[in-house]
Image 1 (cartoon, rainbow, N blue to C red):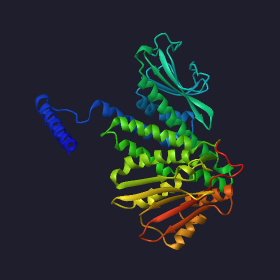
Image 2: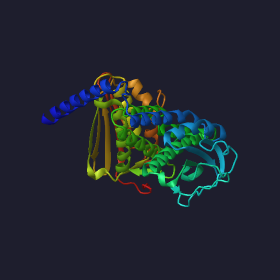
Image 3: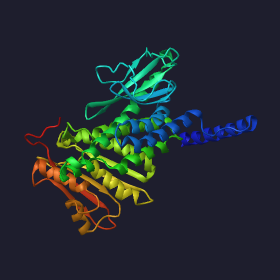
Length: 391
């Protein structure tokens, strides 16, 4: 109670001081410059999405470059394919053009690095330092994001972190573009599996959740954007078909943190996991679609507080994970459609098929749902299976 009272008093005092300052100093912007910059940056991040989802080309790069410069707050930005400039925006654009070569140190370890001495053949070029970030899809470098600055001495750690996070966002969108480009070359079952791994619905709503935090807590908005980038990388890694339940839960928590930022107190989550089942192995992204389904059908369709419960139990040789929501529920026909893939969504049927393919007919998903009483999805997996290992 004293803490709450102190917060109220502090808020009242701050409000009074702000009002007095407005009277004494005339018109004043309500949003601080720092928050305005963060808001502009998040808007820039969202603006890049439709362009980068088309892949990295001179056209998409030229459209995305101004937004990426706003996101990094750098004097200039360049997108490269090898050493060739795909797009350039900002200071120096009078002599740096698409198709020109830009000599930067790409590094050998595939990490973001600072190039304190950037040399340009134009003697009057105002750019003398660079932060170079690789753009990678499925472990392969597909391009480079270069943020250019007037002097290396003015670079801050925040600049490097901002460029790194921007490159992660660009790489995530290029990964989505790469997957979209495989559609005509993949069998229908594999295509469905890839599409079900992550919902575009979640991508846009996650960024909206980040944007909603800008006014209240800019630092949290930055952290949420980092969580989003890490989740996207996890979702689209192709070299790790199996993970432990512990790792899957860690990324489910990242997903839920983004959804909590979006729904606030409307989303109440309970997590209860027996330690004995944490090392059980399952196909990557088996649990997250179940949780996303519970959030979408249990929380999005309701205006009140909704509850999602994730419980993992030890059954001896097997592990059981239950995901329960108290949403609208489903009748028997919709339950059957959800599991056999004939309904609107394919997430549950995809997970069910992959579990049975990995572990056999005795494993997979069960649904317990009734209209008006919510839904429980039960996933059963073996605690150990020869030949199935987490990478």
